[in-house]
Image (cartoon, rainbow, N blue to C red):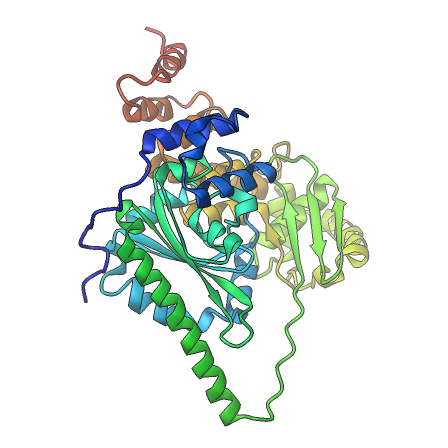
Length: 438
């Protein structure tokens, strides 16, 4: 089956992009009375004003509301999980990876749960944070089709410069909300993002039709379930708790343990951070000798054992479910790390978000062999992912970090990607000359 986005159609004429760009600049500058703003479509103008009221940054990246493990659990239980087959069949038939668009499904809070479609478009939009787990509500990223559709509870199209966030302005999108077929409660949103063909009248008809088809399927499934099991009781939702170890750019790690109603954050000693990090990254467990080698550089089990006793006492107080088991030493529950978070973002193509979530190397002052190995691996992964796929703006930002500073290959790559008349070229050339004096 051919993709519905393959044949490019004329976009409905509207306010010129240049006028919208100037209007946006005037609004951001505080000149709300500028007559060009009045020429912008009311749905966009109103959204811009709500974005300003929410203090949304014009070049900020969205926050990631779901770590990988939480995202999987949350979307399995979401009412729209069973509708993904309909979404794919109507919006991404045939070869989805070459469709030219990205299709996203989010919840009622604007958090993207599924992002699928064209491989190249996903890579480019992922760099601005359009990835599963990111919050694209209007009060988080400003005017965009998914966030604005939820804000006005209706379908909407946002074209290029109409986006509030400048990073999103190369793209156009169409989105429609999805409601509970009985209560009309807002369940989520469907969005199609791509070039101008993603914001045609035909695109809006197709996205609206998909939303209605989902609502119809939800009603049919509900009636079928009621007929098959009239006395079935709803399963009680699983208790969701998680713990995260923050080690990036920190000499003293933070352990964040969250529960259903409250959370605890504790700063660990350098040694406890090293031990817990090694256990978190070796989920299969480690013998006392292997753990001691990773932490001390030698099989110093007699030194390790009393440290483990002290660590257990700390964890019994703040995160009992993380108290390590013995023989081998292992964590009985999953402990996420901010390292995993950054690597997951890189894997999803969210390069800009990954860079903003990377405050520095893993436990920079640690000389534990296992930590040094992990630190080197993360640095290499970050550099390889960014230099292989990221845009030049992200690469320039990376060049300003401690990891990117002094990387001549990185600067040469930036220079090759910058347009011939870019004012940024002079600064890159100057930095290269300092590194490679003639």
